[in-house]
Length: 324
Image 1 (cartoon, rainbow, N blue to C red):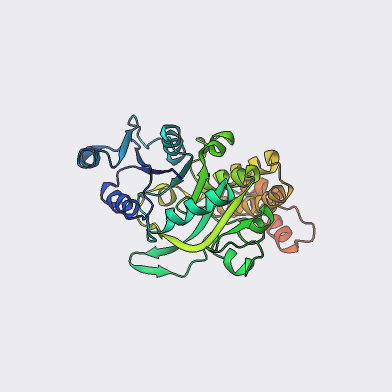
Image 2: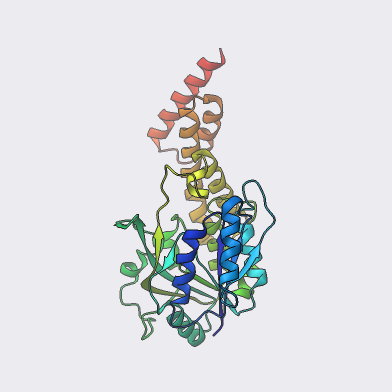
């Protein structure tokens, strides 16, 4: 079973070294490791070039044309998948790492046995060296499924979209613990290069709707390092909150309009309401009451939501006062 590993990276050469080493520590060796260097600059560019020279044959470096803010993770990952030659592709953030050396071996066995299209596992969150008690993305699935009737001997279960929507419908998706058949990735169009935040969630929703066989093993295989909010070193910490929710709104709009699965569409409608409300609150905090009122009214979908009706009336009053 051949699996390619795609690692998008920009200006984080020192962190990247740990990610690459964690791939090399796997019992089942990846057929190729592709680092997509998204236009790193200054001294960082020199470090990437040095790393490429020191790891010939071990890692393939794709150097993208420099851009002031980089092309973004979606663009970088798509270029990596296009370059990949394996039947399956998986992903790893440059500031994270795999902590289970049996991850790829277990996944390869499961994918081969069930002819799987998608394979998911779990990861833990860390802040520095301290493990964070965060209920990440797919982690609640283990207790939800219990001892599933379709669980294999190695602990892997076959999932439905219903399983996934029941416990992790609105959670931030991660690619560190995702393996996908390359053909399926290309069929759904890969990552949306116009979405620079929660692009992983958008891809996840399209993949699970199109996949025939979805596999899941609850073993923790990766360490996700929670970004420091005081350091604008990645997409998550360097983007204003309002912009984040606008991107989330775009992800949900796509799911509502285009997803072939009714469970995904209903989930997206529900979370679209929450997102509109959050945008309204953020705009109100900035005293942009006219714009806040527009989103508050859009988010007032449930007529019995008295609390939100009162909040909308308050915003309307402030918008009227500001317009005088």
